[in-house]
Length: 556
Image (cartoon, rainbow, N blue to C red):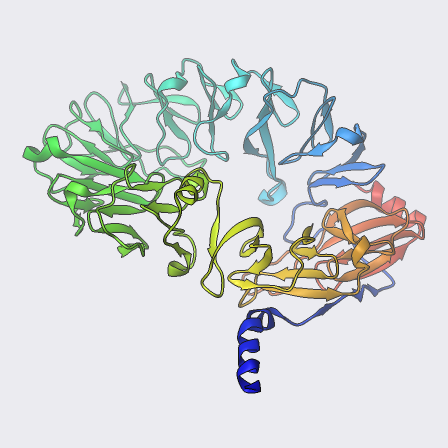
């Protein structure tokens, strides 16, 4: 009887026993007599770019500069890409713009001029409000700032407002943004009027060039393509034979047709002219399919085994379906219990932006997870409705019980059913008091944890050595309790009047065989004086005199 009770006890608590991992310990930074802050051979920047926030001192560092600024601290909020905002206006890299913030949006980026030897110096950002548009700190002329946005890619070359196209910050005179067409070539773009390269209209043998799809272009006489892909590459046009320019028209990103043939890029498909009326094209994400009503072809001419009359694709995805099922990972069926043919919008639903669950009847499947572990049968009508609206997230725990995720902290670290889980395994952390501290650290009312997600298997590891009740984020990736400042599990110095004054570029990895950790140098001041620390590896630190600190801060 006692043996049976012991087995029962082990069965019940084993998930918690398996969740216990080795304990980490806070250690002191190694004290050294001096540190050399010098520009590393494979980094072109003196400073680590970004904001440094102290209680009474704000700093912004670019690649080559460091400057202090002031703001309304009660309303000051960091945004993305070097931007911040307070009640009075917008800050870009610490430079203040006293403007109406309505409609603020970071639109795109443009690489800064490279340094000596082609050293990369980072990017400036295109941004706007409803009233003005800027590249970095410089206002630019945009006809309608409120509609200014990237044409296709945040890091692309082209932008638009409601009327015009722009090559970065430069308006393309005579352009027509409502008819814009994009394709695979980074510095090419088209509208109803022209095809442009680097923002300048181009032609071929004196004839205007019209864009057909991602691959093909044409004039009144010629069908063309270009092997020009890279930014800065010289534009070349190559004539394509056996395609009729006069009747060539687009079908999708990769498919087009003339009076006699259908083409995938420059290649003819086997689809016969008599079946042109039955053509359906499915060309999205990384998938290209075309059906003539009898056969579904992949790309140019690969015959698939999908049922052509019922073939379809889930929106904004590579997932396919036909009367036999819904497919992912190539031709693998999603693990639903199929009773009727899937029909998108009737019994099958998918919205990547609202949870990315594939819903079939009263079943759901998360296709980006770990296979059958992410299959959820027998959902209630309310659960189905909430999944469709992105209000519900599900997981199966280690006992194959369905759980509703209440809070997601990091990849595979979440709260469900009032427990903290790593993947499907419950942890001993107190779910009611579990909070994030930044940089992979968390705490509850009793313990501090480090979430190690990069090992062979994710772990939530206990860390000893902090004053847990008072441990809080200190900004810029640091932690602090009532006694000390910490860089991860490295104890630095006393927590009294601490300011972080600068972050300098440290060691940067070289070739792929380089296993040495990357580091940065941090210059601090506290009640004891100045400190310089190299952190990211083992953690070393040395004191500085006032003269040494002043000299370091004044070097630009």
